[in-house]
Image (cartoon, rainbow, N blue to C red; front, side, top):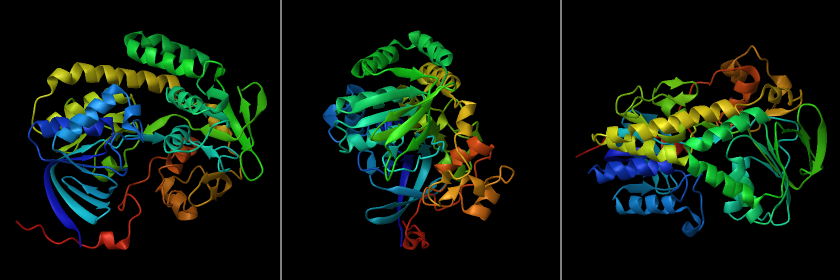
Length: 419
């Protein structure tokens, strides 16, 4: 049977936004519990083995979190969510969290758009490859092709270069004009411009190709070469690994499960970071991809609001972060040619091995599930959902519990909460 635990504020996610929300709520006197699937606080962006490797701001926020009195449930998955009520599964079994307010800080994930060969061994997501390297994957001397979109390319390329990888190509799919205009806009954020320059210096001997993308990956038993194109010509690059994705998309499934309005693919929030559901707040990448600085200030507003404290002094900083997110979306949105890479035999749902020719554009997500099981695998459509939306224009399917795979024992009715 599940145990119950009552708190003032429950925070879903321990990345920059979640940590900031927890710190500000706890320091305001609220009883706070943070749940996160991973074992170390920091989220994907601050994933680490040695805290000394993190930026000063990250270490300071983590130290503040540890001193705040907030409870951290690491290695814990959220599998059902309703306003004020979260069902989670951790190392010690399932738990029902009863919360006066909930802050969603569920972050973002990579947008994978299928192409022939993307299921070959040693083909990874751009950020996924970085996470594996930080977890100990050996890349010294490996020839690696990166093909993606957005600012994530630079820190990933820098990480690989620092670990001895031979970067064979670093490709940005967005046209040169859009990238140049975005770079010119960074005079508003000189810190980001300086950071980008530091990253670029780490792999300065490797050409950065704009308006270029991977068309297919080839190899016998594993990836051995990448076919790149700029829309006019194509060429082959020998490699041992490929990192390929197309930017980030907000993770909104928990918000959908709780009945929050989703607008243009993000959890919609008001000035106080409150969603359309009373008592449910959202912060960070799930409200729009804008980087850790914006996530931290949004988390602070959400945490203060959830604890009943004023946060107006932070609104101007938050609004600058939202403006940056809008510029990111404009500059790095996927180009139309990426829809044309998949051929009839390309797998578009990796969990269920569904090929493109098994689907019909007119079906929609629900009929696609019924006819082919696309979206019904272990990832619950988190990978193929964005791909099918891009290929066919399908709307996101409804979200139903369990939000992640869990044992049947976790779904047994809980004992009533007693005083």
